[in-house]
Length: 207
View 1: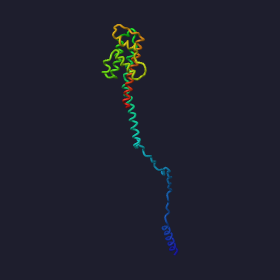
View 2: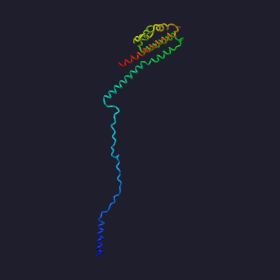
View 3: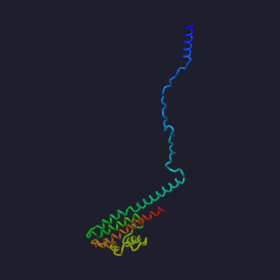
């Protein structure tokens, strides 16, 4: 009887052990910390601005500026082209001015007159200039001064006499003051002719 009772108790204990839920052990896992940068949105860059404005008014203004700049550049080029002979002409005058007093003679006068004639043939019609000589030649040169109404003629009566008479005298030395006066008058004449031609060219471009 006792053995039977013990068996029943053992069977009951075993059934209780089997029916009891098995205890599960949860591993101690560390939850990762949340990164605050994950909440940031992507940076949106502004739209790229065009290099040139698309409005018609800006294009019109740019066109006007370019045309105006081109006009003034062309006008400046025309002026420099017209006045290009002034520097070499003055260089030749300086050579004549530096002649020693004993070398100033009829040949010097002829050389100076030839320089004036070369300049005039460039800026005036050949038929108007090529055949001029003597009094008519000096009158033509002085007339260029009268065009601007800026005072006395380039060449004085004494200068005209030197120009007209000296070339026909084989052995004639010219004193230095008269020669310097002639050189100065010729320089003024050449400068006036070249600058006036350049201004005329500029006015043609402006028109």
